[in-house]
Image (cartoon, rainbow, N blue to C red; front, side):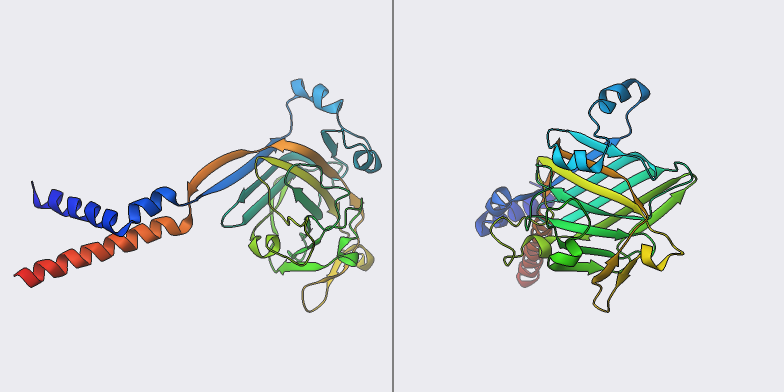
Length: 279
């Protein structure tokens, strides 16, 4: 047997002796859940149009509607989101095409683990996107068919420069990428609290808005702690749905491979020391 094979065999034996292989086999895996929606092709639009609700009140009241969509301030081109159930990383991206010379520059968003999030008080987080200041703020959602949660329910977290805005010709994308573990692990908001996490199923309640840059009463405002003191807008569109199926990809937990590397390095060092002592 060559020296390389001897060393490899020794390392494997060492990991077995230390129980590392067993740990690897038994360690939990992280799952990244993702969902993507694209504007339907012309051939599919008749199917979707028949299921869209025309008003925000209708979308809110009729939970049998699989999809509520309004393109009042920009045509929805795509919706994308991902969630990692171990790291807590949540991403969101919404792309719009200009309609009647209008594009959204903000919005509010609630994500659920399956049902349409509406009517659920103290269960999910609501995110406020401000594409002008780039601020992102989160509160406990009050379940109502409006943006008032910031004025009635507990503040959760804020992120300066949390909202990314990308303009590409007639298109605009509003997105963010954050860690939600601190929000999801709150224990002071009741037994039903889930925060901002989802798995095999996903519900979305997203209202994009148009702030008026030259109207002080039609913008978002904040205090020194990053909490909202005003969230007023000119117009709103929406993308509302429940019971959406996600796709899932499993990967080893972030710490697993690091632990393997450290253990192997330790065994390599031990092997080298033994060799030096024998010389």
